[in-house]
Length: 271
Image 1 (spheres, one colour):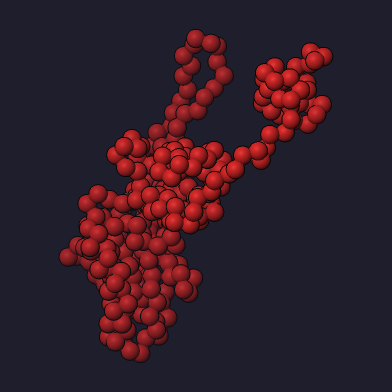
Image 2 (cartoon, one colour):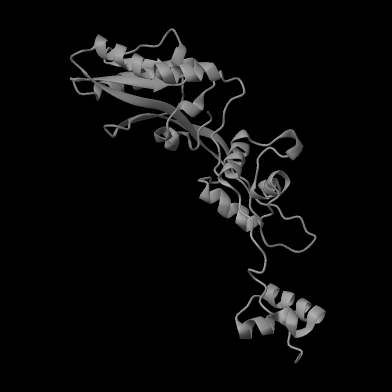
């Protein structure tokens, strides 16, 4: 009534500008009665346990063709309770519901389109059997499972924004180097043993060097089961495998089977 602006009123009474603007609209429409607290004046309808289970199935199934998106974000999930269950929820309430149901917005690991789901399932199912076979072949050795990978580190810098005159087209030097370094590494999560090799090239000959040097680091009473992908230099007929190492190849086009212990190697890699 005194003509104060909404930000000024909010600063005095401890409310946000938006709340004050809403109060002004309600006051202009209904006078002092419009300023009464209206929270809790309606019955809040909640989702039943069955409806929450259906919503979880909808999330697990991913977006439908009618959703017109490739990934369901919070704003994409917000209309679903209203359209399928007749329960309207704000975006903040949808996020709260998602967290309560045990969901987080995570970045998925890539899956190659040529990957064979059956081969991946068979690899997982037969994993313990394969370890048992290796153990029977080396009864006097302690088995250690290692995961091996490679990464390429180079220098391909990017440009950033700069302050310049409006309408001008500033330029800056961009350093583009085509020299790079390969990091070949293997790690045993159980024992914490890790070995690496730096090389300017990556081929079967270099893999043989790594295997030879890696085998020399193993204790006499241990046998290493090394898991790696199906890269060409891993499958070459020129490959030389030391006696204290057994190689197990992952199914083709299935990098997601490599455990998270190898992620530091893959962070800047090309796989």
